[in-house]
Amino acid sequence: MSTSVRHVPTRFRGFAIVLTGTFALALAACHHAPPPPSNATPEKAVETNLRLTAMGDFDGLMKNRLPPADYARWRAEWDKSHAQPISASPAQQQQFAQIMRMLTEPGAEAKLAKRLQPELAKLRGGKSGSLPIASGILRAAGQEMIASSPQLGNAQKALATQGLDALIAWAKATDFSDVKKARKAIDLVCATARQLHVQTLDQWHALDYVQTMRNYGIIWNGLEEVLNLYGLDLARSLTDAHVTSTGNDGVHATVKLDMKLAGRSLSGTWPMVKQADHWYDAALLQAWQKAHPAPASTTAAPATAATASASSAAAPARSSATPSGKPAPAAPSVHPAPESSRAPHD
Image 1: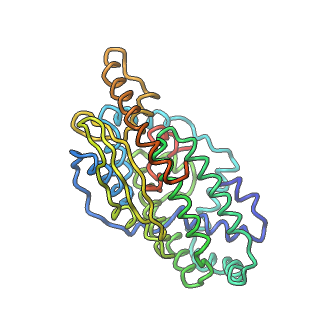
Image 2: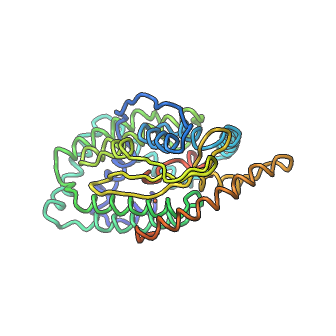
Image 3: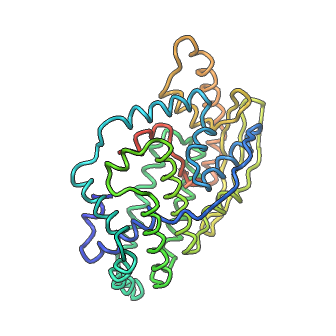
């Protein structure tokens, strides 16, 4: 974040900071009942993942996406990484503290609204080039993340790319110059920043796992709330997605995911694999087990499951990529990755 803000022209910095804060911090106002824990079918497993994402329950999501032993290992790695000294530079720490102070100080809403007025006027006049630049950066960054993710098979990458294209098209077509909506967005940002109870990166780093996941949920639900303010109901897109099975041999399965995002219809396949009566994302499980091989005494079973899931994933991946013509926020891939145990404290 710090690099992008520093290189934005001075006249756009105020707008960029507020926009960045809006999409990073928003009021956690979605309260959903927990979804049923049933994953007896591949369809239920995918539906549960989508609903947990919409809820911002990232710990529950990780429990649902990894077998119990792998989840325990993921937690242990998170704790070990979190125990390391904070990795942010002094400049990054200072910038974070400045932004949090700006968002949480008394009268922050009025100050930010006043600061944003000139930028809104430029947007109404079509004179600001910051949004086209931002959308270009977002597209490039999103495509790189999708292409390089080891947790996404070809089928998921195709679906994620469809989602990225839909979001960018929505952002380009959306009028962000509305003063009333901008003020509501600022109110949401400031309220959420205060809910986090964090002013510095050191304080963030000091949060334990439960507190960190709670804050991730606040930020994610806040993002959903701000997007909804501008007409994009991300939570509904996730929870209303239609999941059907297109093949199931009892161990390997493929589900078809159809959903609407930002006014566009998205469709793709999702390879699944069954372990201990629970269905998991085959590509993610294969990537996790490849990076975390089981001890020698138990290597055979996980390796067999991973190899089988890989072959299962290959066929539907090829058929999915062809009709889309493309190479996947969850559904856009918004789940915390198992390898990302450093994320909460980087």
